[in-house]
Image (tube, rainbow, N blue to C red):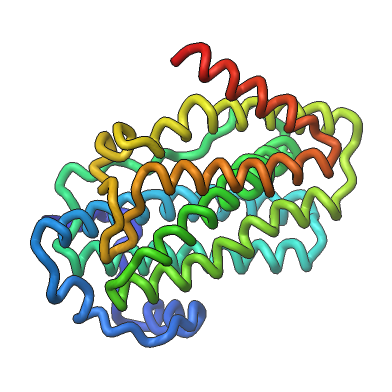
Length: 277
């Protein structure tokens, strides 16, 4: 199966050695990945890590654009430095997931494009920054931590466990970056109104678009296993419980602390979803 050209590593030469030194990932015996596994389970692992690779590619692009926006906006240099680490981490995650895909059989010839994050062209730079912080960091990365924790705890394959452990540690910092931003950076009344409107949109999307993908039918549509597997597969019920716990204990309270009426927004979004089901 061919590997997509997008982000395919050189694996040799000065760029490769610089990249390896920068991400400083511990030694992983890639030859052991999927070496002694039933072919069906191995294929489930390949599909799972292919989806993870696509998610990480989307995050890499979104956070590289955020880093550029923060630099252009003259954000504090320690904020820019911290965001640089987030971009570095996402580059590593793309690499790690790609390696797992290759070791488990390679990329599908019809692998889809990542679900790229995009904002209206009319949005000003501060709105693009705040939208990425709220949607991709506070919500997206916090939910990723919850799901990665479930996956890592289920992974019995040594290599998959190492990869997911590293990714979980990184994703945890990424989510906190968003909450640090809300605590540290003052917002004008216009920015606060924008934040509340945008959070309404994001939480509505979680209820209508994201939660259904955490069901048995949603996992089947994505080609993902609805059971624990050596490569970090998680059953639909556990995935949904993890998402709901993150929403109720971290995301909604975090937005409320920032003066955004997320509790009301989230309750309304869930009620509307239940009425339409």
